[in-house]
Amino acid sequence: MADGDKKLFCFGYGYSCHYLGYALSQLPSKWHLAGTTRDEGRFSSLKNKSITPYLFERGAPLPDLEYILRDVTHLLISTPPDDDGDPAFLAHGHDISAFKNLEWIGYLSTTGVYGDRDGRWVDESSDINPSSRRGNRRKKAEEQWMSLYKNHGLPVHIFRLAGIYGPGRCALDSVRAGIGRRIRKRGHAFGRIHVEDIVGGLLKSFQKPTPGEVYNLADDMPAPSHEVIEYACDLLGVDPPPIVNFEDANLAPMTRSFYSENRRVRNEKIKRDLGMEFKYPDYKVGLRGCLEAEELSNRSSSEKNTSDSPAMPAIFKR
Image (cartoon, rainbow, N blue to C red; front, side, top):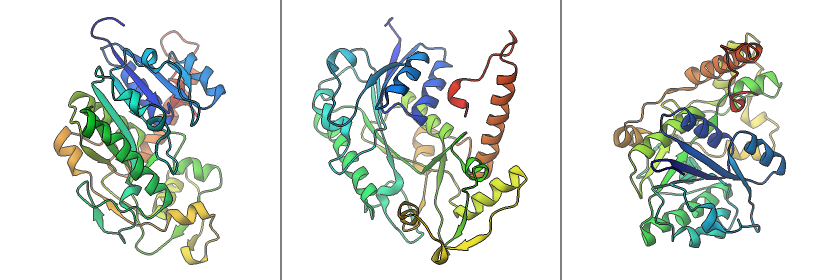
């Protein structure tokens, strides 16, 4: 790498990391991108996007981590944890503790670590009290990565994400697929975060690192899921599915567990500390943005053979 260049390495180069990588590629500074996947098919896909890929999963650590991370300045972790915590930390936490060249480390956690609050508001100062197995796994993973800050002085940041959505992964797609349901549970609401606002928060943190801090990334308007589906139907010009009361709904265990927690998540800290401005402060603006992104992607695809109209990046295509 040339002097002044930066390099991002992502454990778990998935949906959010793709958006972050694309945003970095648009900056005037030079960024090199690398990351891991568990899927050999995605390995080739990453390579075709000029992202240096590595295969990694629990029980199969990366070979020669010192070589792989030698030029890395920014490390992002989005691998899903299991009961023992984060697989990337378990495999390489000790090794990473020795990398003093790292300017920034981020762990993507979830607001699920707050547990059920019966609809009350929480912020970063609230007690961590997960009420699900998934929440407990994230709690353990947060503690593991934060130990690198507490014990070794590494620049670790924790980002607790609400429900992630964006083009190709939102209520519009559920409605089109015929799986969007309007389930009503009295008093239930949850927050969301558009993938571009995740990227916006991470970029703000890149610009102003605050090691040891925890930030919520959730929009301004927690809302019931049935309202989101109804608005998606509105945008698509289709009739909404009938309202079904939670008590009468035949839900899969995974979906039912989603309704077992009810909280509202504040986002003032990241606005105050890092100057974060949400591009999509509520689900209505966000869903309209998803629809506009789809239309732009479709237009660029139809014009890709013209010299003046380059196609949209593959990550924005469905």
